[in-house]
Length: 313
Image 1 (tube, rainbow, N blue to C red):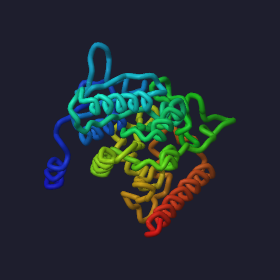
Image 2 (cartoon, helix red, strand yellow; image 1 turned 120 degrees about the horizontal axis):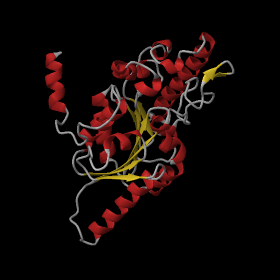
Image 3 (tube, helix red, strand yellow; image 1 turned 180 degrees about the vertical axis):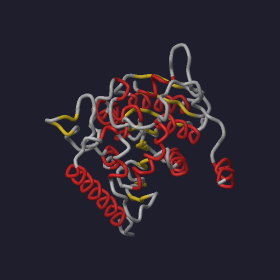
Image 4 (cartoon, rainbow, N blue to C red; image 1 turned 45 degrees about the vertical axis):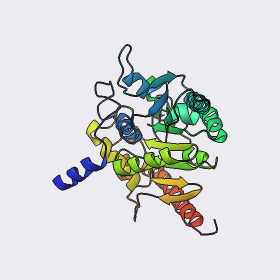
């Protein structure tokens, strides 16, 4: 283990651009994902951040946890603002007003800002072809405003606006697959990332930085507060999400799919659901329904990998 830690310290940059002193909850995997993303992005980065947990915890006026230029924008329009910044810098460089150099233009949003409120802004930015990166930090509900359901909330999860009870088993719709929606835009790079797999995350951010056009990263972001689970289990939950197929790690490079963390045999979905209070009301029958859907989606992903790996694709 000591040798592994030494090896890891040589691979990942030591400097952090999201500093300590922020106000994230204990065990927040979302802020850990953001910290790791910025280790990969480095200093030459400009951020447009939507309203949400990461904005609230990192920017209590007059303080900030950021070491890079950071702009707080409305809930829905971080993609539009980032695309505008990218366009402005491109014009200034073309006119010789500032030196030409490679910068990272990044937009952030939670699942509510991405899958719901800001989806059309995100779609427009991707369709226009801006060289920018959009990162969705998906904690599967509107955690900042009281744990309300979003279209990224998984089936069966209990939230304050999809509560479980005698007449309801929690969330009644299936999680919206925003990564697939972005892949349908035919952009150069789409990937899922997970802070429980830091080297996979780091590699994918670097690929997004090198993309010749828009890139989209969808981050698994365990929220112990909203998911009603012990904070020290956040990293374990991230690994269980991958091992059960609930959140597969894959990338789409110019249309070609590749699973980046292979799971030879999926673990029972109960292993993932059991530690989370938001799922404790689910009956065995409902868990079976959810597991059937998860495995069907995983097989569909494997089929896309096989199809797009063909030489004539």
